[in-house]
Amino acid sequence: MTITLKQLDYFIATAESGQVSHAAVELNISQSAVTAAIKTLEADLGVRLLERNHAGVRLTMEGARFLEHARVITGAVAAAVRSPLRDRKGLAGKLRLGMTYTVVGYYMSRHYARFRKTYPEIEVEVLELPRDALES
Image 1 (cartoon, helix red, strand yellow):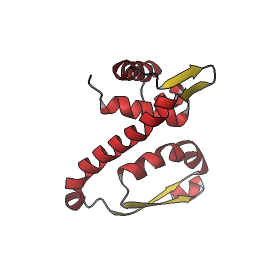
Image 2 (image 1 turned 120 degrees about the vertical axis):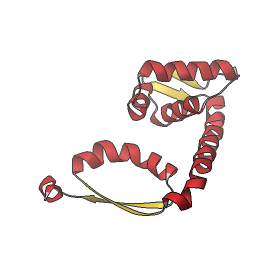
Image 3 (image 1 turned 135 degrees about the horizontal axis):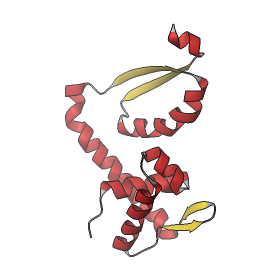
């Protein structure tokens, strides 16, 4: 049994979004790649993690327990990867972003949680401005 970080990431994204299609968009990969990775993960573990239905997916009891562990594992790996880079790259401070309402609504919400998880030392300030103000 070899479980990969990709499988964990795909499982977490699918569990959090409730739909394979949404997870695929968030991860910028095909739905079939997400489905295949999760099916392989389930086969390796010998349990069903997700119940699939017409509305999307729902965690099984085993899936809910595994999700907690998957989050801990991916968080620990992200922290380990960031650790040696902290001082060298100065990955701390404040990031100010200016964007339109459309970008905030459609893109920022989808990527903000992942950014905060990857870079918890960086404070993000989002300024929602009209397009002409951003271009000037």
